[in-house]
Length: 147
Image (cartoon, rainbow, N blue to C red; front, side, top):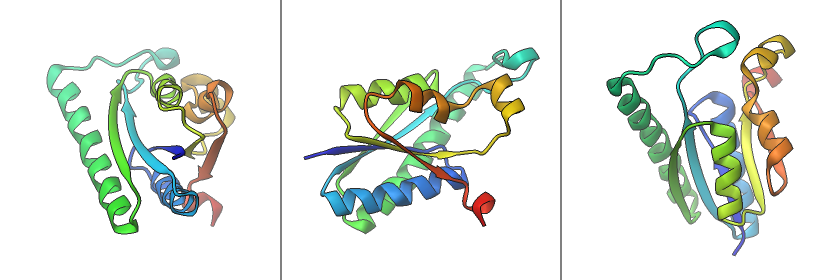
């Protein structure tokens, strides 16, 4: 059975990507791997990592789990076989690694739609995944930006 990776962080574009991944999984009878990847937010010159206390670390992990639980509920309602993966560290690298480990046929993720200046300073997870993924990648835009 084919595997589709759906990356989510709970943002509007990520939620739209999960919905698209559910449609694709249903249509192709694929298994859906829902992945929540997070790392310390940038806060300094050129996106230097922020200080992260132990409490912030666990709060981030727990928030990621809640986002994935909500996505898993949507998968159950849609009748799609799914499992969740919480991964820490660099999100783009973690998504690509999971796609390779799971022999995924497709990655579906949202795009925040940052402009070129912000993307140059803090990077773009979607751009990195597109360049380094072991399979095709579908980028779903933020629904508010495409309206």
